[in-house]
Image (cartoon, rainbow, N blue to C red; front, side):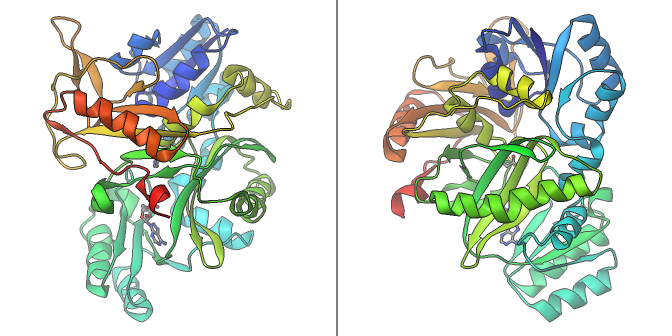
Length: 421
Ligand code: AMP
Ligand code: GLY
């Protein structure tokens, strides 16, 4: 069969590469993809993620069995609804189900209604009321734009003044446009963060190995929030009891809740959690795979991913198996300056082979040849599996030492939390 992946980042590279490993899959197309992916035999289609009618026409003309949708904004734009209306299968939530991600306020209402543990909060569109709430609650406190803001609409404020300033920028200065026309202000939760993913159809779900992302740009969790600078899975110091509790108190009730709301969930559910003294609490739901978590989770899948997705789409029980031993760890290499302004067009090191996988995000071929050039904030990611976090770090950082990363940067401490604890 032939399948289509929608998106262009490292996450989509990992999804598409895993699908192509299936004996049942002859071709994997990625729209629009990036040139780095073609080094793994993936085929780019020059159609953007919001061009639903062109994507549908492509899928029909090429006998695509089903489409896997990567990015949140495509889901929020109703891509799965449009495919279904055209009689095509797509793995991802409907616009209504994806509201769990595209409106933080909606997600909060669902959590309150179905008793899912999360930070106490208030939602405001009026600045004076938001300010009064911040002053009343005190700091630290977290201010979030209600809508999608490319992971940048969250301010963890250490002081009341910072929080008021963040609310002012969102509500009065329109820093995030419509996404910030409402803000959710919530209690600061202290504890260790982790990402829990499930493959879902309605109330049927399958849990993936838990992962830990590194959102800050620089070592020691310093610097601005990014899309994610590296990750590893599983998280050796968070035990099965933590996962089981999160499944019972979070995954099951939210999926049952979405069914009860008439918005049954299909696709990947991503719960961003903090393990507090009172158990895991939700900081956010996302309606898709995480980036960079996907790149370190999918290499651990030992079953046929394409068959697994086919089965879930058909409400059959998939046979999903994972590598049981070791840890998979990945380090993102980004353009200097990211997440703020950065240059493009830096020549990238050769793709790795063998034990270290290279996943490309922002990469394109030079016009005059085969050199691969940087073309975005996060550029590529190196991923490997080893017996321990330390051994995986050693392999990756040794490789990075040998690469020319002028004009690029990466964190030197991905996974170090797992070693210290
Ligand atoms: P989000 O975009 O919602 O994932 O938030 C970005 C980051 O802000 C998270 O990864 C957390 O590190 C932090 N964060 C968000 N909400 C809270 C909270 N209620 N308490 C503590 N940290 C938070
Ligand atoms: N890794 C964070 C995200 O995908 O939102």
